[in-house]
Amino acid sequence: MLSSRKASPYMSTIILESEVSLATLSSLLEDAAIDHSVEDGGCIYVTASPFNFWISIDEDRKFLRFYSYWPVAIDTPEDRLLRFVNECNDSIILLQFSVTEDRQRFYGFYMMYYRDGVIRSQLLRIARLFSELFHRAVEHEDTEDLLGVETLDPPLSKAEPSEGRAIH
Image 1 (cartoon, rainbow, N blue to C red):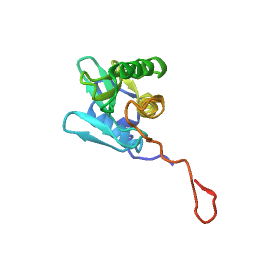
Image 2: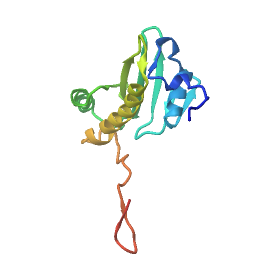
Image 3: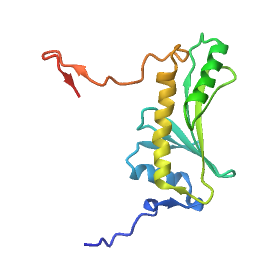
Image 4: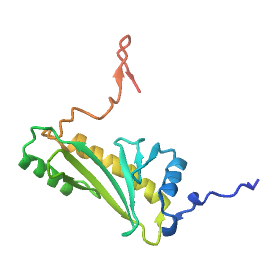
């Protein structure tokens, strides 16, 4: 039986350039069951991922900017921190990494061009991949504990006290 319900414009394969907006992106994330909020500063804060991040729109240059940051440990030497940033830029695809001038925040970002439109599924995949890759940089690439992270990964399983078996 065919539905008489009108299809949502957000479910089409391509989001037209003229339709790229915070409202459209928010609806796309909502349809994909990705937790997020639209913030007053003109960006979307995505919270249902291994690592929270923001999406903003650069309407002049036609880019979607995915970005996040993590604080740097206070006693981290500058040369080691800059080497870590360079190593992340060399080893992790897509994202670009930097550190603030005062060396207090480690940033990761990705710019996605949307001139002539953006493929809906690609945008969702990039959102998921961005979070995973930034998490990898902070959690797994920082082998010298420059960012002061003990662990962000939840335990894969834990032993049940009475039986000693893994619970998944």
